[in-house]
Length: 107
Image 1 (cartoon, rainbow, N blue to C red):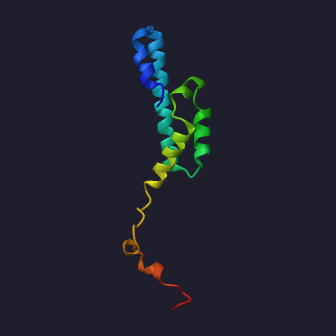
Image 2: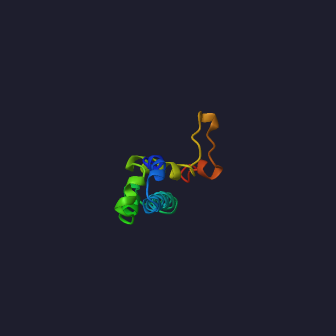
């Protein structure tokens, strides 16, 4: 997340109230990213829909602690693709279940 390390470094120069506000906004940003990841696993919404929903439900101050839209889209796609089987590197690696090898017209 861009800005987080800079904000953490600036905490020592801030008042206690500013420090707590920064920490709160950083944690809220992390929660928003986790919400994006959860929605990616649980729904079939498009990445744009997920990001829009989370953005609407986050405060404007929290937006600076979120990754870019592109980075969030990549995270969503990575999460969704992690459950897919790996692609075979050759035809020899391709495993087709027996029930899919039969065609009712050929029997």
